[in-house]
Image 1 (cartoon, one colour):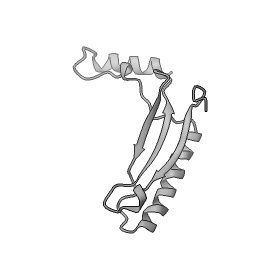
Image 2 (image 1 turned 180 degrees about the vertical axis):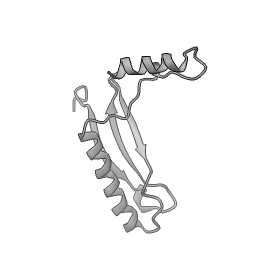
Image 3 (image 1 turned 90 degrees about the vertical axis):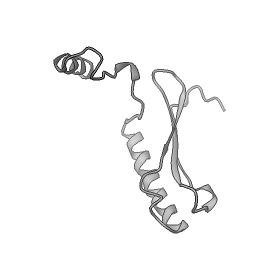
Image 4 (image 1 turned 60 degrees about the horizontal axis):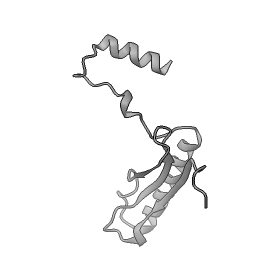
Length: 105
């Protein structure tokens, strides 16, 4: 399979063979527009609070659909680190505001 054109690898529920001592999660991959590499994302929220395998599986399917809907809407979980500005980087609040608004439109 040629993965060079792959942009998103759809979310999957990883339930670790039903072992309730391990955390279940949603796993998906997104190609970074900055590095052109596939980056893995694991989301644990909303699944592991349940005590039975059936409850976790149902919650996992709901969370999988949640992340799939976000990805289909155009959301990407990758942020450019070189565009992050911190308090101690020499920019005043006004500079950061102008910089952010010029980048975001």
